[in-house]
Image 1: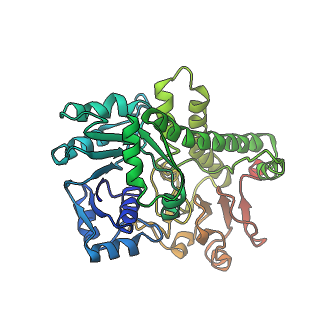
Image 2: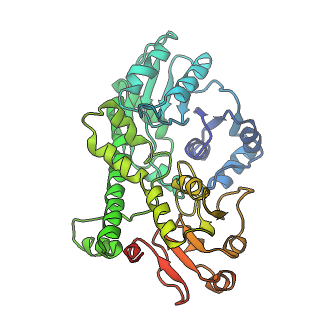
Image 3: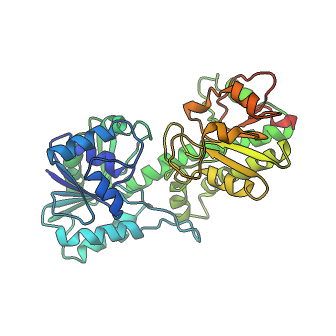
Amino acid sequence: MKICIMGQGYIGLPTAALFTRNHCEVVGVDVNEKIVDNLNKGIIHIEEPGISDIIQNAVKLGVYTASLTPQKADAFIITVPTPYIIENYSCDLSYVVSACESIIPFLEKGNTVIIESTIAPMSTDETIKPIFENAGFTIGEDLYLAHCPERVLPGKIIEELIHNDRIIGGVTTECAVKASEVYGQFVEGELMLTEAKTAELSKCMENTFRDVNIALANELAKICAEIGVNALDVIKMANKHPRVNLHSPGPGVGGHCLAIDPYFIYAKAPETAKIIKLARDTNNSMPGFVCEYVEKMIPEGKIALLGVSYKGNTGDDRESPAYEIISRLSENYEIAIHDPHIDNPSFVGFAEAVDDADLILILCDHDEFKYLDYDLILKKMSDPIIFDTKNIIREVPSEIKLFNYGNLYEL
């Protein structure tokens, strides 16, 4: 089977890798010429365990090719971004529409087209299906269209693509069957066949569920800071209940999924989806909350900001709340940014970041930040303060003042 995958990012490239490892020929299409050139040399641009070796081997064997344009194939998979439109929070389908239109000259009767990009409910039937019908195809008879959303965790993408259950949402029953045959090449989890609109809403609700629960933890942290209670102790004690699982508060919610997908539901029913919108507002308020307490800790000076990735031990900084925090704090503070997982010429090493700093602000739970070099900190900082917004540091020397969401009320 030959697969053409539109988009070679955090989802498209790992998906391509697994198809090549399971006796498929893959063309990975991307609009970035540098990415395409590097991929054809076996050089990947994302930090994800296992991907590099698979792609290097696939290039060597000639079963993977990166391209700026699509090619004829048996199946086409769309994995392009779907941001939201700020004015009304609706799903921006422009990249998906463009990708669909670009493959039309290469489509043949009997092909399968799968939309993996997260999209708003009804998008497949109302927007995507007409694109192919207007090109002369009959969906479910000579072209098979489905929405099959990804559901993976950065850092474990290969493992989860293989073992997670997969939602297969066909425009027709036959469309779902054909799409399941594509994923059956490597997916070992259950292939759950359903309608496209059910698949669309299921994916959006998965991420909305998580966003709402994080918002509850973040709201608790704000309440505890206001009334003088240790939020971390509250969470620890409450979670001893056999049916309670409060999440951990943090500096905000990032990533292309949780920070965006709930808006797709809200935009469809804004008068009804009140909890969803309030959760988004709560999580969006956390960068401001962090900055408020930074100002209470130090009115001016230098901040060593540790971590820009939205998720620990990855270089994924999509929608990271760190950027809003950096923007706000840069107005009144000197900011030195350190993130060992992101290649950015403006970032500095740990020693340079903490040199003469007044505050260390931890915004990501990279393993490197869980056990800091306290001897170096004491040497470089005259009156060390650490604000750990990810609650990952358990103990510091007595000369260092540690703040987290358990003791902000002391300020």
